[in-house]
Length: 78
Image (cartoon, rainbow, N blue to C red; front, side, top):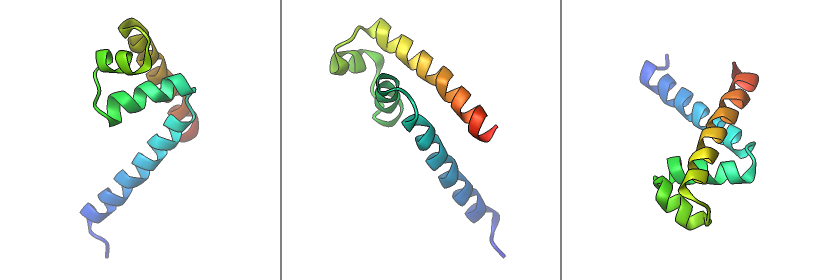
């Protein structure tokens, strides 16, 4: 019998893979800011400096990327 913590660990890994696959479906400029923000733990100012766009544009891209991710996830797994 498989214990619950092992099952939860497997489920978490599967969710992480699914999320990364969903992120990979984003347009490049959205994918970039999501990865910088959530995986590299960069703030919006740091992302703006790295990408050469304004902090406001970074904020808009993150918002749009999260909206698109929501749609992708709902369409594929919802």
